[in-house]
Structures are given as C-alpha cells and as structure tokens.
Length: 269
Ligand code: MET
View (cartoon, rainbow, N blue to C red):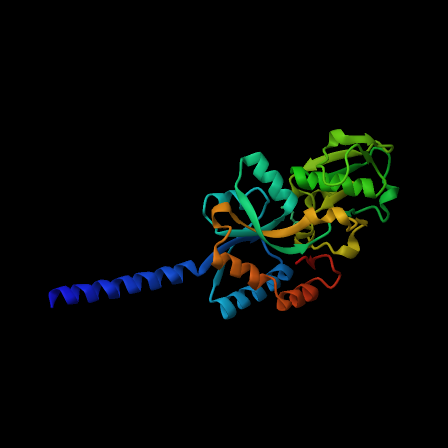
C-alpha cells in the first residue's frame, strides 16, 4: 500500500510539475522597441491571437536603442526579439560572433530623410550636414538613400554595405554626421537633414508626409524586412513558431493598415 501511495504521490507530483512547466513555457518574453500607440496596437492584436489561438502569453520588454535587444536575447533575458531587419541581424552576428536567427518576417518600413528647414532635398546647401545612423547596416542604408536622392555616388551597389569611405562623389561637399540611430530625430535642430528609421520617426512625432525623401522599395529591399529573431538553439521551438504564426495573420494586417494608413509600415510576410 505504501508503495502504491508513494507511486500515486509521485505521479501526481510529476503531473503537477509538467503541468507547471507547460504553463511557464507558454509565456514568451519578447523584446521590442519602446512603443508608440501605432506599434502597441499591432502587438495587442498579436497578443490576442497568441492567447486565444495558441494559449501563449506574450510578455514585452521595451528597449530604447538598437544595441540592447540582441544582447538581451543572447543572454537569455528574453526569448525572442522583434525590432531589426535582416541586414542588421547579419551585421550584428558578424560583429559579435553571434548565433541569432530569423524565424519569421514582420513588416518593412522604408527609411526617410527629414528636415526642419528644407522642403526639397536637392535644395540642401553646399557644405550642409546630414545625420545618419551609425550602425553598419543602417548607415549603409542611409548612404544608399542619399545616393537615390542624387546627392552622392558610391563605389558599391546592391546589398553590399556602404561606409562613408565608399563615397566617390559628393558635389555639395555634404558632411555626414554619424549618430546612434536613436539620436537622429533629436539631431534635426542642429543639422540640415537627418535619415531617420521609421520607429524613431514615429516616436518623434514625424509622419511620412513630413519626409523630404523616402527610400525606394525595389529588389534590394528584402534586406530591410523586419524579423522575429531567436537563438539558434531555439530555431525549431514550436511555441516560438506559434508566436510567428500569431503575428502573421489577416487580423495583424488589418491593424497595420489602420495604424499606418500612409503605408510607412507594411506587412512583409
Ligand atoms: N524597424 C527598423 C527599420 O526597419 C529596424 C532597424 S534595424 C535595428 O528601420
């Protein structure tokens, strides 16, 4: 009898434990950039789908600059993050000997040039200053945008990352001011123009209609698709895959269209 009771107790005990583990595993910590009401509305829709359809509770950790969320993911402080595009991830993995992988596509947000003085980018004065993000992928992206705007020429093309050293022609002798991406909007008071990533533009209250130039979307744009990222060891984690499925729905598409009627952020899956 004792044996049976112990066995039953053990059985119940294990049962509770695995039950508890299951509940714990179904909470997923995801790192995102500090929100705007636009982005919050998108994540609210995703959270609702995750909960209703997959029984997953999403817990958000908010970050204010691009340098933190990949480190937090690598360290296990969060399970997933959703703030970067393919090119940023590639550059980060390379620079940090990293092992992070994309497990799903989210949105694409073309980068834009803003200015407090200029209405037309070609009116920028001789020797004018343009602020650009200073991380490898976004700085390159900004330089290609200035090339598209006809301000500079580069000796690289396609998806090869450009640095200021690749500028082969700069007829207006523009000064490129490299700043942390999170500071580019704040720099608008002290520069002639700034190339600002969409999330920081929205946070600063800038709209697509305020932009004086926007990045063209073409065959090289795939690298700017934003992604949900995991540690390589979790690449096939089914709970994380369900988070991707919860993101990539018609309901999310509708919320994105409502949050960004100017199409400054569009679904990319
Ligand atoms: N959401 C930003 C963008 O698409 C991501 C930049 S990479 C950290 O511009």
